[in-house]
Image 1: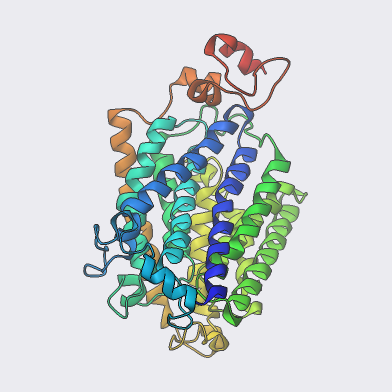
Image 2 (image 1 turned 180 degrees about the vertical axis):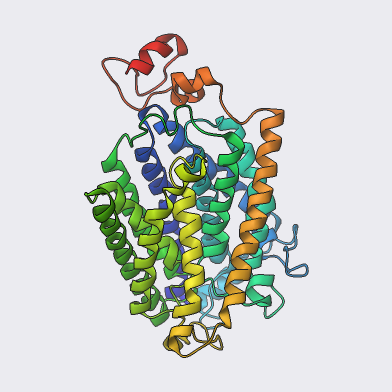
Length: 446
């Protein structure tokens, strides 16, 4: 085995795993104080559930032998069968009797598994403070099974021309998941926000973040982990990985600047929340494009994404849907921006990564990439939105998805988890808090 490549894939998988706790901090800090723990638990719940489903059948659905480009073989790698190295393989690796430049399939499976986890966790930010935790977990398992695992096959399953219909069919450029991760999660987030409705007081009372330092720490961990998210997606530890690293770095910086300038001109102040949001917007936008553009192209993509997403997060007030933590404005819009700007910025100098792909419009090409990029992006958007809406509606009409008005007034941390994140004047223990310990009236006043 190429031990350098194998190590890079496993290190990158670990970096991406860290992104889910980072997301929990980012979302937890953005939320109101009575819903911090619930918000973080939704990410940790996804981490526990999807890791198990991925090993049982998720990887097989995503990367098993393709059925007409739409779904992998459900049982081919059940329980990672066929991926675990046997004694003979381990002995061959020990003496170096394996093909040069190869890496173990199970390392790739591990890397892709943490992508599945964070994609599901991203959705939760749209439904803060109002979703039953058990219902969220049921939704997460069903959505991952019928949406994420098949879409991962569409986008990531390259099987010598016989893989996913986006990867090997229309050959859209999406290195690390602008469609499979961000557009996919953003569309599902929009659907759930519509199913659950608005938080009590949305648009009438301030719903400020409870802990901005926690938001910035979460954004920093996401930026740190994203170098694994993008950097190992070519499954190499060479110059291409370094190229991707640089593009990821500089696009994110440009997005921060773009977001802060918009805030300064529009609101009169550049905020820490804006800086953290700009970080995520830039990371989202460069994800599909990081191997297809030059560093200068990455700067333009990041800058445009920062500006566009800074305006997009306000659409929920104009259109009347409650996307609590701006999943739609950042991930759906940012994913679309990054995926579609490849049409303009795809560079011949990045041909080592995308050999045979046409150049973008600004590099002497035409609009040949437009139907590929738009086709993949909007197909995933529509599929995820429709399925998420139907799954969410089914749960709401059967066991219920939204908590009661009384529970929302008391605080979802207390009613769903019997805990409190902070202690205010002796109220809340930071640990187990039986309902009798805290009255709704006292908690609301706090």
